[in-house]
Length: 369
Image (cartoon, rainbow, N blue to C red; front, side):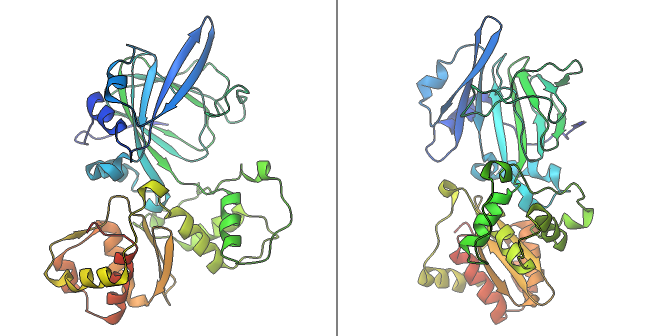
């Protein structure tokens, strides 16, 4: 589904993207398109890369990809506002790629929603119906599909946006040197959910199941309502969808499903996880809040909450804790603004519940201190 994006969003140059690819804590990949007669294959290398290696890349047939750009460069969270109609706990990251002419990552599909925003240059997208393209048996690491042809290919130019629902085969090839900004979603699998539920000793082990079959079942929300797109909010509808993702013979409670979902979708990648703070340091930070300037949520941090009316269950970087219902207003503002200003603190009563929430959030590494 094509569309367009507004101008004014931050951009990266190829050199700036290459600079990120040299850093140890940045997830980067180079994908090379290799041609032999009529046959096309793809080869992947993982970063970090040496500057000299990037400077000596050939003039065509390669793509450099950087994951989690918005976590390393907070200004790029502006792209996530393009998907404000989706609950933000569903958003995984902003991936930015630069492709030389002919560059591609090959024909593939994603089992989650993807929003592709074209920056500079032109990229040609071929699309196919679900289930019409077979997996490439020779592509083990990259899990590519067999090449396919789309007679109605989409040419994405600067400012264009393309939405890809889960499971749609797609194959993008750079017509010219181009930059693409890709917003990907989190969609837990049934296997992930069962593993989380069982690790929490939520219930006894389920009957044996076919891993290959189950791993293909992903959380989906095609019936998403606008009222659910509140920053940080995990809605009751999400829990019902989660139950549909699991087998009907698993008698998990709504509370167990909530904890499993909230834990998974707020779990940072291991190399992006902010450090957990010790109690004494956290208390010192809490005591200094009254005189502090604006306190911002750490760029790597993931935050969500569930409001049951009787309690507010907060999820922070894969941890969870229930707080008094009078903390909902504060956590709602924090999820929306991702910061605490002196003005915000003046509006909130200095209750023991709020102090407990702030102390816990500080300990989980939520704030950029």
